[in-house]
Picture (cartoon, rainbow, N blue to C red):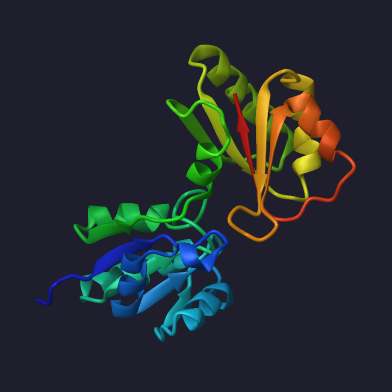
Length: 227
């Protein structure tokens, strides 16, 4: 029986392409297949670094269907790299279930560290970094949003942690309004377009950030940090 392949979780730049690591490039060059959240997006990255490898889409809408096929390939000795559109795979992105199944099947899983929006925003926020909680994306449905904010309230009351979460630019105004109603005097950092030309980091009270942005159009994925 042939040796099993390895599943590599390869972090890619969150904006600036120069942030990719030497090791990440080496892995992308040597694997047999690259699973990408968006093959067009990853194709631009690979072309920039002159890497020619087979690409296959792997996203939230086909993850369940493609997982058995990918596990079988790994068992047959195929080395696979999993990448997301930006940053570290499986963090608020597809891939967790594939990793869990691969581990269950005794397939080697190796994480290749690199760019990460959570840590990039946190370390430049000026807020405490000794304890933090990452909560993923703010839910879209109103009922789930209320539960989400209640979870934040309890975290801040119980352990005084720094709370980090993502929001879409289309809903950030709504989120800021709701945060203002619940946590008007809490310290908030809003970071967007991290490592890109139009990078912006705003720091202040929740109410101050809301007033500064409530009438403006926001572009780019947003990272919010609340303390």
